[in-house]
Length: 291
Length: 291
Image 1: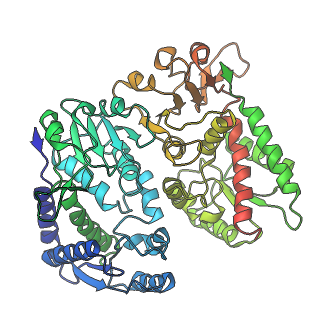
Image 2 (image 1 turned 120 degrees about the horizontal axis):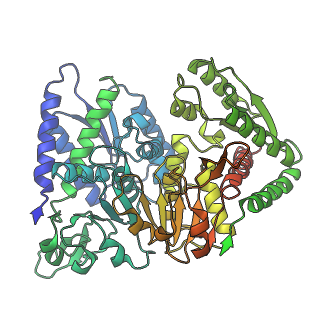
Image 3 (image 1 turned 90 degrees about the horizontal axis):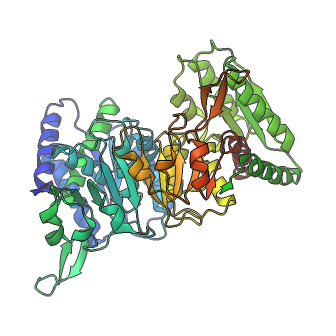
């Protein structure tokens, strides 16, 4: 069994990006990070993104509107960044407060600056196999983990557990593309699936993204399968200071021994998202001709 | 075995639309049909669309630029129709001549007039389960055939043979949606799939859209399955005046007896496309507030 080390792979990507950006002499890529309100998880995520940007030489512009901002005001903020030639990428940290329509906000970001890949056009481009678009960071990170672990999906059966817009659907579309490394047969199952274990047991590559702690057990996995665990769940744990531990959608202790490759949680898919965000930002910079 | 009669179901939909449109008093919906050049199949398709439109009270505007039209000129034509408040829907008949980028043309059509559903935004909206978009006519027709034949996909295993942008991918995304009638487990297989019969035999609903004549044989289908045949292939046949006969992707004589439902070719999915185009045109009219 080989552990897919997301921290290590993400660090490699970040180092590659740093080298590429160091070679840019006129202007560095710039990402605008918008965080609405003071949600503690969002504060920590945005900090992490800001820090990685600084590490690799991407300029970041941090915008922190109050939680009371109206949708119209947020649109105006985004419009200003869309029009600003000094800004290459724009990320609006979710979740947004309830009075704001999140999908509408994601659509407001100009497609060519949508480094989060949540704009409808960029999702459509994934389906169209159009490389001028941006792939959302988590599915893009999963494909990178597989490629950099030497897992070629061609002709293999990828089973995706979960049909979310942010992970399940785009990763299914990516695995299906007629591209080197992809070209998989893809099944998507979810809460309404009958005989779910029967299907997951057929997976050469199982991608678990349903948000249920340790849902995937050993009897659901074919020996020799590759398992990618996208879940990050908090499970009560009295032995921890925090009172909980983090766990994935896969019951790691029983599943890992029978896999050919598996990602741990934490330290698997998670670390990849910020690396892919930076990769998208550099791509936006280049597609914009350095603007 | 129940034959799903596409002609009959399409006629029902057309009759429903005719009644709805008859009730519109101020202005009737209008579809612009652009046909570049004189490709015989395109001539016949556009005629059929024009005739159905006339039958149900949709105004059609037929534009027949010569095969020598440049991409820029075609864009200008589309831009004019996009801006024209009297036009609700725009269809550019494919195939287009080789010197024109088909995807770019489909993207040029304003999303809110894209009754063919080929604009990137409308494909993205299918993935996003956003009903304000337009679903391409063939996948939309398949879903209607299933719904009107009393086939509920919930929790059932839909296997899609073929991953085209026009049929395979959108119908997979539709079957996966969290909506009444949908909610299926979905597998997508294709030319690169290993052990294809093993997967198709698991299908409760098999949608064949690979463009290979009579590819699906009895041993590939589970007894009691629903089979939707999207293929239209010409097979040489000396007994016919034309020298060929039309056949689907399914070997009908051997597969049909063991199905619960099956579509014939011709007379299955084919007749649905024009009906769905008209349905989309009325939808565009209504979304535009009758403009």
